[in-house]
Length: 294
Length: 294
Image (cartoon, rainbow over all chains, first blue to last red; front, side):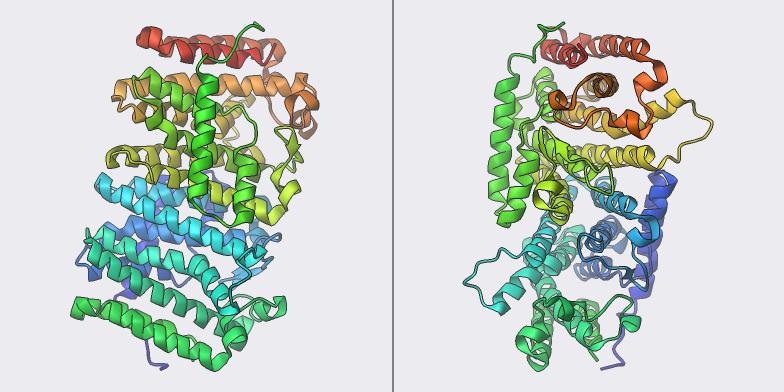
């Protein structure tokens, strides 16, 4: 599977999103130290998976990518904020992220807290300064705030527990990840459709696609943590095992975890079958997301 | 001045806001530990100044207070989040707030970070789950995200400096506080007017009122820090002096700081003169806010 690549238009989309975020950030005229910290976290080299999902979902629903840029930025801001705060000493205490020192190592803990807070604010600012019609803006704010809240809930379950004791390990794991990573990935796909003024049917199809690749993404991530070196992943790996955290390979075994990936890949593709060739890029992206396990 | 009281309807408004926040929070069905931490920070006994400003500004512009409740909640959530994060060990390292242990003392630092993040999310959720027309929702999100961002900027200037070296101490102080406390108070007044579907003129009048009482509020707060005991204020006092921070009394002297209060009180009242008797409650509130220095 190693010849799988990102959809052809991805590089151009990511470049456009980064340019938009750079310009939008400059327009805020923030204090220099805050601007610097936000850029460190937001514009670091990264996969830009969530903005890519927004843009490709918008395109699949026959929308223009330019109209999706504020939503692309909003999602990446929420994602970046969550990484900065999750890495803090009192949280996961990570010192490496995307191959570089984490923000609190590079700029201090107080700035990391404030920059994370500012990134969350900036996400909603990006949506509200867009020229989109008010009803679209309101719908996007609804999706984003729901996704961000679910992500925080997932982090709470992951850190503090508190899930129903009757649940099996697998149910527990799915509930954590459906919130922690899944909700924002799903929101990205839905928001892309909303930016294209898609109807409820198409937003629903994007939801199902997003849920499937969200779950797939997490299983791939867990397998990476077991199989890859820290150097290659650009962040500390093997930590989940050390911390005794539930992961898909630890609960299901490596082979069954791989089977979940195959199964969710099929669900993702089936969800967008109705779009025909227009869904090709999202199908390619789903394929690409599995390759990281190879 | 000790017979000055909150406007007569304040207690009923605060009770209604607290009830609304309680119900809205219950509807989120959050993990128990997170719900508990959010309630600890959000529903603690407090002045509820920002929701009160939203409600009274809405009422002054002939709107119904019920229509302003989501905005009331949104402002109080942003305020509560900022207190929780500002109190953290790597920030102001405060152990007492509203007469009780701060959230990170009571529930741990990781939960305080997450609950703060959740409160910011919840602020935007409150606006987007309201039944208000989309254009009003979009306008409210714009005001709230602008206010929250300015607040964070003010905190950055206050913590890390970085202001133009040409500025005088007084200019520096005003710039910090216009952002740190002023922007959210101004946003509260504007959002109240927006909830009443007020036109730009009336929103502008509320802006000027909000700016004046925002500045006044900060000067009063600085004087309290000098003059009051920790027990009476319900938070550590005298800290500004110890930390060598710029404060109005330290820059202007106590007498001139008091004169700023009188001056801004006049500006506040002049800003709402056009509303006639309908502005009575906001005028009373402005009077009340000065009494804390007595």
